[in-house]
Length: 139
Image (cartoon, rainbow, N blue to C red):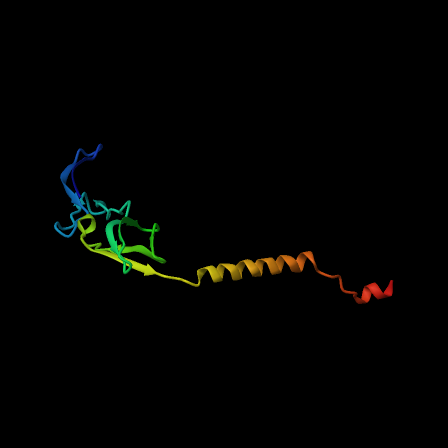
């Protein structure tokens, strides 16, 4: 991405013009110096969306075509496939995607354990017995 810019100072009438670019793997970074203290620069653009159009072939013979995005994994046969990264030096022209595959067969057991702990804590509050203390015996 690059911009051709013309800048004019209202008070002095000085005019500067030229190219400003954040650069990429094909073109170098380019800034425009206006004076000793001020320069115009273009920051690195941030991607709005990371995604990959993939075809998944499973051991069971399934062929699944999906779009995998960051924070939107695809679930296939108990696995979650996450978009983890890409070739950032090439940006939108990247032809490399990095994926993370996660399989957690114990997750239902973990959730069941958490629910049981919450139920136990609630039961302690609801069904607690009042113990006789020293002050109760004096009355």
